[in-house]
Image 1 (cartoon, one colour):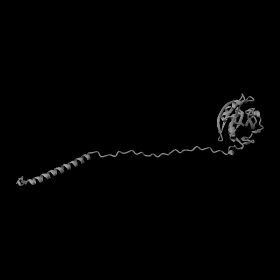
Image 2 (spheres, one colour; image 1 turned 180 degrees about the vertical axis):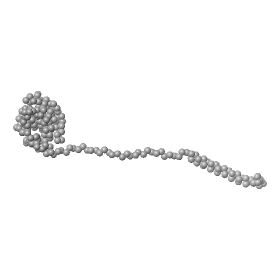
Image 3 (cartoon, rainbow, N blue to C red; image 1 turned 135 degrees about the horizontal axis):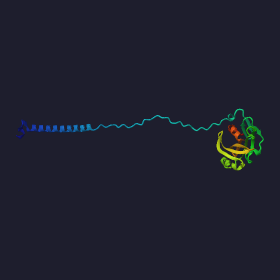
Image 4 (cartoon, rainbow, N blue to C red; image 1 turned 60 degrees about the vertical axis):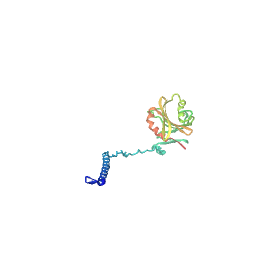
Length: 236
């Protein structure tokens, strides 16, 4: 029979089995090669690199300390009075000056303007070596007749005598109280005289504190005037 015929010493059945094994071996090699090839290509691919992300390093720093604006603490009135000074007082006001000043009976003719009421006048007699005119300190008042203190002072030159000149004018603060300082220049008994006027508002009242002296003596006395104005107060 044909199936019993032998080729190369093998029957047809044996040859068929051998051929099947060969085909299976080829398939196995093909699959193995494919897997190796894929693994090789994967091995050639660059390994993923983790790109470093810059990390922000916190640099320690100090926040600036905010210092609140403090309201100045009022200085006790007694501490404003220089040692050895003398008190001058009326029913309305109080002020201090060095020894040598004497309180006078107010005379309207000595005042800044006829519209003012002169409440206090203090005089240091004239020094014949310096001037024929005494050093005069006056405190006057009148009702506020303008919308504000600024407006009132703006209209002040119209009330002055024609021989009185406004040399300077500026805002100042005296013991935490706003005021306006007006420097007047004039001639009295042929002497050049300066009159430093502090203008305060107290409710509906305007107060004038004047320091008058011959021009040379005025500048010598200016530190005294600036210390004295700190002791002025309305008596409550």
